[in-house]
Amino acid sequence: MKALLVVLALTVTAAAQNFAGPSSSFSQLPDAPSQHHFWTLETKVNTGILAGLVAADAITTQRGLSQGYREPIRSCVPLSLAAPPDRPPVRP
View 1 (cartoon, rainbow, N blue to C red):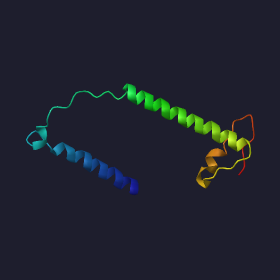
View 2 (view 1 turned 120 degrees about the vertical axis):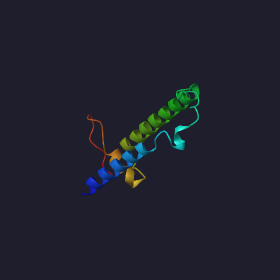
View 3 (view 1 turned 180 degrees about the vertical axis):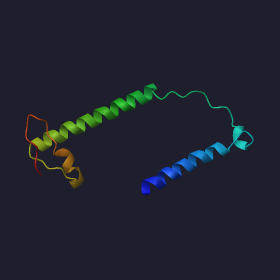
View 4 (view 1 turned 45 degrees about the horizontal axis):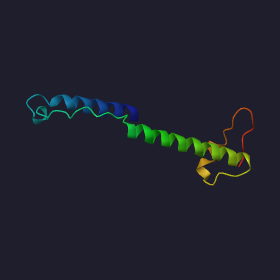
Protein backbone atom coordinates (compact mmCIF):
# COMPACT_ATOMS: atom_id res chain seq x y z
CA MET A 1 0.00 0.00 0.00
CA LYS A 2 2.84 2.35 0.89
CA ALA A 3 4.57 1.68 -2.43
CA LEU A 4 1.35 2.39 -4.29
CA LEU A 5 1.02 5.77 -2.56
CA VAL A 6 4.61 6.64 -3.43
CA VAL A 7 4.06 5.76 -7.09
CA LEU A 8 0.84 7.77 -7.13
CA ALA A 9 2.54 10.80 -5.56
CA LEU A 10 5.39 10.65 -8.07
CA THR A 11 2.96 10.34 -10.97
CA VAL A 12 0.94 13.33 -9.81
CA THR A 13 4.13 15.36 -9.35
CA ALA A 14 5.38 14.46 -12.81
CA ALA A 15 2.03 15.26 -14.39
CA ALA A 16 1.89 18.62 -12.60
CA GLN A 17 5.04 19.70 -14.43
CA ASN A 18 3.18 19.55 -17.74
CA PHE A 19 0.75 22.26 -16.62
CA ALA A 20 3.44 24.95 -16.92
CA GLY A 21 2.81 25.63 -20.59
CA PRO A 22 4.20 28.30 -22.90
CA SER A 23 1.88 30.95 -21.48
CA SER A 24 3.41 30.79 -18.02
CA SER A 25 6.22 33.02 -16.83
CA PHE A 26 8.57 30.02 -16.66
CA SER A 27 8.83 29.88 -20.45
CA GLN A 28 10.91 33.06 -20.54
CA LEU A 29 13.97 31.80 -18.73
CA PRO A 30 17.36 33.43 -19.34
CA ASP A 31 19.95 31.73 -21.48
CA ALA A 32 22.02 29.08 -19.76
CA PRO A 33 25.58 30.01 -18.79
CA SER A 34 28.51 28.65 -20.73
CA GLN A 35 29.48 25.04 -20.24
CA HIS A 36 31.36 24.40 -16.95
CA HIS A 37 33.99 21.69 -17.10
CA PHE A 38 34.11 19.56 -13.97
CA TRP A 39 37.46 17.85 -14.47
CA THR A 40 39.73 20.86 -14.21
CA LEU A 41 43.34 20.51 -13.10
CA GLU A 42 42.41 21.50 -9.55
CA THR A 43 39.65 18.88 -9.36
CA LYS A 44 41.97 16.17 -10.70
CA VAL A 45 44.66 17.04 -8.14
CA ASN A 46 42.15 17.13 -5.28
CA THR A 47 40.67 13.78 -6.31
CA GLY A 48 44.14 12.24 -6.52
CA ILE A 49 45.02 13.53 -3.05
CA LEU A 50 41.78 12.14 -1.62
CA ALA A 51 42.36 8.74 -3.25
CA GLY A 52 45.89 8.65 -1.83
CA LEU A 53 44.67 9.50 1.67
CA VAL A 54 41.95 6.83 1.54
CA ALA A 55 44.48 4.23 0.37
CA ALA A 56 46.96 5.22 3.11
CA ASP A 57 44.22 4.99 5.74
CA ALA A 58 43.17 1.54 4.53
CA ILE A 59 46.76 0.28 4.53
CA THR A 60 47.56 1.58 8.01
CA THR A 61 44.27 0.26 9.39
CA GLN A 62 44.90 -3.25 8.02
CA ARG A 63 48.48 -3.23 9.31
CA GLY A 64 47.31 -2.18 12.76
CA LEU A 65 44.59 -4.82 12.84
CA SER A 66 47.07 -7.52 11.81
CA GLN A 67 49.37 -6.47 14.68
CA GLY A 68 46.62 -6.83 17.26
CA TYR A 69 45.18 -3.34 17.41
CA ARG A 70 41.43 -2.93 17.64
CA GLU A 71 39.08 -0.63 15.81
CA PRO A 72 38.32 2.26 18.21
CA ILE A 73 34.95 3.09 16.68
CA ARG A 74 32.49 0.25 17.35
CA SER A 75 30.44 1.00 14.24
CA CYS A 76 33.52 0.34 12.06
CA VAL A 77 34.21 -3.12 13.48
CA PRO A 78 32.07 -4.98 10.89
CA LEU A 79 34.02 -3.22 8.14
CA SER A 80 37.36 -4.37 9.51
CA LEU A 81 36.27 -8.00 9.98
CA ALA A 82 36.50 -8.64 6.25
CA ALA A 83 39.92 -10.11 5.54
CA PRO A 84 41.66 -11.14 2.34
CA PRO A 85 41.25 -14.81 1.41
CA ASP A 86 44.84 -15.67 2.35
CA ARG A 87 44.40 -14.94 6.07
CA PRO A 88 41.65 -15.49 8.64
CA PRO A 89 39.35 -12.63 9.64
CA VAL A 90 40.33 -10.48 12.60
CA ARG A 91 38.10 -10.87 15.64
CA PRO A 92 37.56 -7.91 18.00
